[in-house]
Image (cartoon, rainbow, N blue to C red):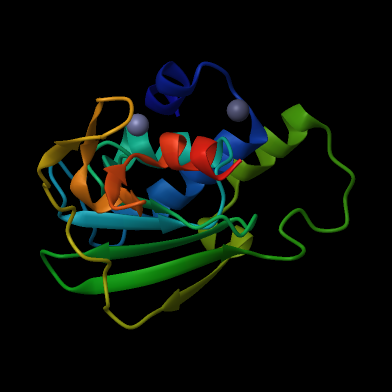
Length: 169
Ligand SMILES: [Zn+2]
Ligand SMILES: [Zn+2]
């Protein structure tokens, strides 16, 4: 929790959900990922994701954190070392039918077994591809170097996405 708070900046229920997810994962045969060994696929971009980045080493910059913008507190993990995979999805009644304050939710999550908070299932091992290193090419309009796979073709010119959007206006 301390490590996650140092990274995230504050204590909140969202971060605590992520800490609970990370705790389950570390206690079930997965390890911190200095490189791209462990991949996290998250279905939200809320506070919880910062706990995974700081505790599990599944980070945006390394490419082993994949964001799917579904607005759900669901988390899938694939370990390239062991070919194990697991998915945690928050239970509909994770907090019971109690109305809890923000602080009470943090305390509740810290005390609860992840098994009580999440539905946990083994899933097929089909991790996303490894991050690719690509050459950078100059945009023919603004001149900025751009990853080649992100270039658009417009009037036979290869241009970056922001320039493409301006041209289409
Ligand atoms: Zn937060
Ligand atoms: Zn450009």
